[in-house]
Image (cartoon, rainbow, N blue to C red; front, top):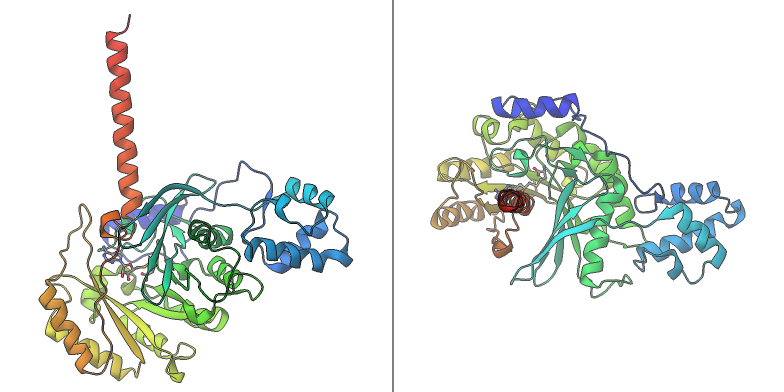
Length: 409
Ligand code: SAH
């Protein structure tokens, strides 16, 4: 673990504000497979990599286009399936490259159609992705980091020890894997099952800006998966200095995990607020590219009993959003408790009332219905239950071994 990760872990206990703008987190450990992963390479990088293994420059553009099509339009993971690539080249490609998928440690299908994947990457670290089908869309919730440095008090991911950035390949791979599982290859522009992406899984995407940017550009590529930037939403807890670049360089919709309307309460539940104050955050929202053309920002607001859920809080929320002239939508999220969490979810009537106040002021404030409760689809829950299960399995195995050695000869 790096110094910064260690520091943020220690400071978590004291609730000090998290470290520098981009906390340095551990890099991925080297892979057992020495072949370069095609996933996560930009077109230019792929072209250069092909030239590096001896593909003549004259052919490089054409080969790049072909391989890109097989990988991102067809979902192929075996070079042998690339029918229009010469046999010899296919063999050379397979020696130098791979098209990876993370290992699926667990895939859970909820009765309501929600699918949750616990994925293990080459270095053994794990992250989650969740697919949520709705009437008119299917949203894939993608992780940007393993664990998280932010330590938001209500969020389970913040309690995990290991933190590292996911690589562009690992971010793209979550989309690829969901499409594999949903049988969505080749890409078709109508009848999509994954119609939207939210960068709302584990981690803070704006702390892993370069990798997230690269991955999303691959996902948006016109000759690949072709998901429009209008169908992608990046959620941040408020890394103010990176918000403008997010709009300018990625161009996706912004969601902000607001969760409180005063610095006092926000300091407590989103410790990042000690670094970037509520006013700075709302100013950055007002300056977000597109906001003045009525592109709405989504504000996420988690309903915590007795903490942030009063009528006065709702009215202050309305006042803040109007005083910064923000075209906004508020998502009210019932808190999903986890073992050891210190908060309770607000009562349903309280949430309704809060929602009514905001709606009456002309701001949409739907209450998000929890999805996939039967498979514990909320943030971080699958990962920790699986870990617990593994631990108890290990203990059981150990106990059996102990018994065997006691009763043995
Ligand atoms: N770091 C980014 C992305 C993580 S998504 C961000 O903070 O926006 C974080 C979202 O997960 C929160 O806005 C919240 O809506 C949701 N979340 C986290 N823990 C939750 C819990 N226990 N119950 C319900 N929603 C939770």
